[in-house]
Image (cartoon, rainbow, N blue to C red):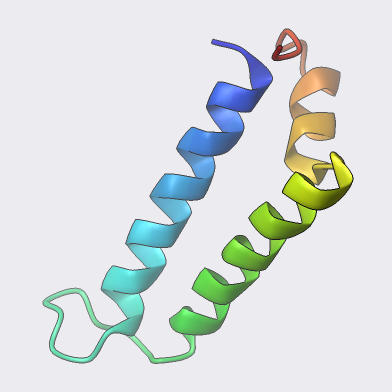
Length: 69
C-alpha cells in the first residue's frame, strides 16, 4: 500500500468511527463532541487537497511506507 492509500483508509475509518460515537441514537454514542473530530478530519482532507501537504503522509514516510503517486 502506498502512503496515499493509507491516508485515505485512516480518514475513512476516523470519519465513520467518530460519526458512530457522535450521532445521538447510535448504539455506540459517546458524546456529540465526536462530531468536532469528524469536522477536523474533513477540514484536513480539504486542506491537503488544496496545499498538497498532509501531516499523516509525512509520518507514514518516516515509518518507511512508500510514497504514493
